[in-house]
Image (cartoon, rainbow, N blue to C red; front, side, top):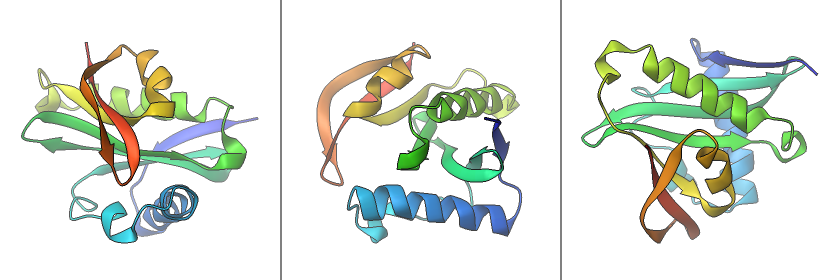
Length: 144
């Protein structure tokens, strides 16, 4: 199994990102499409994970008034449990760390309950109470 994570640099790759998010969030988790796609698509840095050349996962990060928000982590069901999520988190963190404007800013995310252990492996810690976003339970997590 060859796992790669690449920064999205063209429209074709971005369309693959949106397809993966549609499968995971809109179809599987029943998130309203109007909630899934937002005004930050063009200003976020997107990533595409592939296994043996087949796109299976995605994530993005962007600047907010609170720091650097990592979000939209999605892995197709058939590819879960193969380290795709970990590879995405590692790639996003490496890219944020390589971005001079991100130095000293808080790295955070809104983790679905099932993903809390994944982010914890990278040093993220829960902040505050559990909350609901798009009918899914989440914790805000920050990199300690």
